[in-house]
Amino acid sequence: MLRISEEVQKAIEENKPVVALESTIIAHGMPYPKNVETALLVEKVIRKHGVIPATIGIIDGEPIVGMSEEQIEKFGQRKDILKVSRRDLPYVLSAKKWDATTVATTMIFAAQAGIDVFVTGGIGGVHRHVEETFDISADLEELAKTSVTVICAGIKAILDLPKTLEYLETKGVTVIGYRSNHLASFYNSDSGLNVDYQMDEPLEIAKAMMVKKEYNLEGGMLISNPIPDDSIISKEDIDKAIELALDEEKKLGIHGKESTPFLLKKIVELTGGKSLDANIRLVLNNAVLGSEIAVQYALLKHKNM
Ligand code: PSU
Ligand code: MN
Image (cartoon, rainbow, N blue to C red; front, side, top):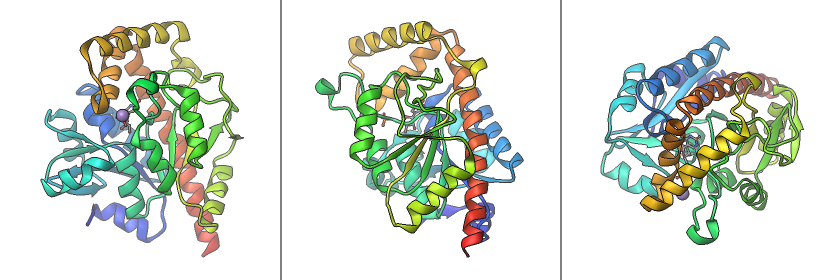
């Protein structure tokens, strides 16, 4: 059912560390050519840590686990690539479309392939004004049921952070702050909100993953990895951009699956590209941590065999 690349398949069979990567960030999260450059650089960083990257996307209705450089390039350039979450799968798989996988759908195929760790920038969450829109990302539901550890730079401030944390709690998703007891907020390292637990070493996180597996506790874990200090955008600057972007979204009547890509694009414009640089930096930072966790988890698996 999945087209897993030879390299990724071999690594999974040999219990070598593999890290999954999403394709919505390529097709809808960043402009060309920065999107492709970043995707390839992230893979390179992961490889440098002795880990195999597996970028996931759908081509002609076939889920690909471990996209080639050429395929990543096409995802970065083509304008007809759909953003696909769980509810879209029956349609796009049967209609044989080209689709970018979100956090939710990347988790689904990573889990099916046997990949335990997934690195991204930011996840979807509970949107601001949810009481009017009812907009809650399917990413949160997926975290509730699919057993993949997701490394992100916290929850982006375009969302309602306190409500997103509450929702994750209701759904039984463990949220861990890496070397911080506060939730990161993407462009900032500290949202002011507490996380459930702080862990300071990749091995600690790998141990938590192992215990979760041994006790058959289904669902994902979320690791909030703060953006490095030198790339933080001041709260003042980013809040201004977010307010303007949200205003414009409302005026244009944009909602549903278009919302997140629209806001990301608008914020890049409003910050003169600063938010894009920060986004690239934090994804690379997450790739390092995700690789370290994957290495430790693979070692624990070997010990248990
Ligand atoms: N946040 C980002 N960059 C992204 C996304 C979120 O900082 O590219 C993408 C991810 O693929 C995520 C999706 O899964 O947006 C969430 O969309 P929605 O809110 O429509 O579920
Ligand atoms: Mn939504």
